[in-house]
Length: 391
Length: 74
Image (cartoon, rainbow over all chains, first blue to last red):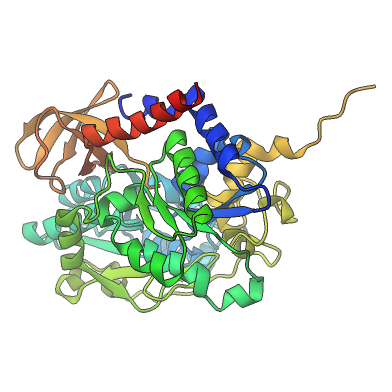
């Protein structure tokens, strides 16, 4: 595929790796956080970490919207399907995430936690959709039913939801609403460095960030500039292919060596400083910042999410169904909070690979293939096992 | 979740839609977020919507950067 294959050349990756190894200063250690789950997945899948010198450590950040979606939000979606008779349309990503059982009425509440998939087996009308436009179609086809679009995702995924709401308003659809769980990238990056939990977990010095690829296509590179200055951390925006990530690491190493903290753009084939103005204007028209929103694994991130503006209140599922949010704590031994901040690695968690697996995830980092634990489980866990020669 | 793929715009259709070629697969997606896209452009497609344009010159420049690295070592 054009613009994909050329950015996966193993030979070029080796060359960039050699360059990084040559430029890393011998007495120095480099810790870079890739914020995005897309990068985490690319690093694990393409073996990028094996190409990096020992002095460079990649910390896998919280940038996977499925992972950071709190259980209480999935409970709300299950509640709408099981107890309110709504058709719940959702991306496939959310279907398998274990929620709790409380969303079901006591009479039919199962002993084991529910997921949207299990709620569907219990009779909930839950439809997997590829695009918000599919939810619009469902609403048109089922004029006698309530249709709720369970909207999750970062800035990449928000503009299509905004289009959905605006289109529903234009058509005067009265049976469509959106359970809005859209979250924001720059505030989460800031939160990682500033939050009170940093004291609780301790912190590892992060020397720089690999900035989001497709989020930045929409928001542009400008929003990170303030951050780079304020926190004196370099940011290199990178594409999701392995060569993009390697090149970004090289650029970060150079910035650290030269004592610079600037925003650089490796993904210049798709990211501009301004971003997609059409998409930004649309999102600003339909959404506004939310004061309080919990991120799974990070806690409440100030201004870390969006809600639907009062002008579009009739499309807000929370208002329409009078939903209240109830937080659900993760397993006590889950180490995701520390892993997301780079203080611990997946293998430091007692639950990793035993109680907590991709088939039965206990914490946010195992929930989707883009989470730090799931990526390590799928592609890296055998590297941890020492090779012993049979005698 | 933010995964998106580069696709070639084959034809613009009515209602801000377009037919695209996604590595050999043809699909109809919305161009509402990238109204400036034309036939022959590459767009980045996410959840049924083009969210941005690909700049072929910048792509060449980035690839040339990798290639220079290669020459530098030889």
